[in-house]
Image: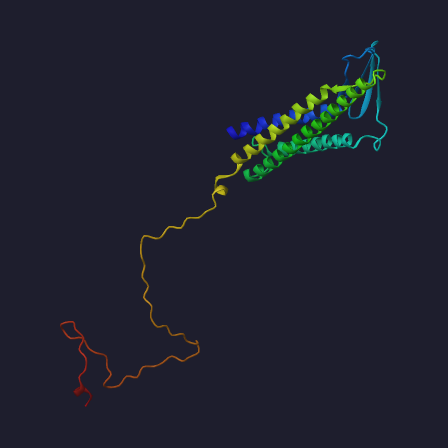
Length: 259
């Protein structure tokens, strides 16, 4: 029962993690404008992986997608790729995990096959979680680097006002979602051990010596060709069968019986 609970809980946690990765990738608030010491507060800007948006004080919001791919920074494209890979692996892991659940029977599927499918889905969830955490961390590192560079430029030239961007809500969603997918994958790998049949865990065979010692007597063995004629025994007057005496012992002919 504990194996089934661990498997189901791992499936639920991994599902939440994959859903969170999809939501974080689709969100626009990966980076938001830092309004600290910003005199212009009528316009609020924020950016995502796919478009940048501007929200005015009147409530009107305008978003513009990125119409270029080659013009974007290489690290930005790497973040996109990591999030997409994590989502694809997470969805495939969910499909495999549904058929691997112990509470679901499909045909005559054995427990060993379910154990292999559970381990496969667990590995997929772990890789998906690591991809999401890595992608979000790389983007956060980019924000930190650009933030301090913009701050240094602002203090060097006080006349130039530059927009600084800080962490958006999508980053925290991505971190939590990646952690959930990672934990769910670990739970699926732990549940795999309970699905392995007992006879396949211990494959060593013990041989017990028999209690009775049997001794074999060897003797000469003559092999015939199979085509030899049967030998006939010659019986003469002196080669008659020995007659038994009255006391039960066999009496053999003497040399005077052949005269």
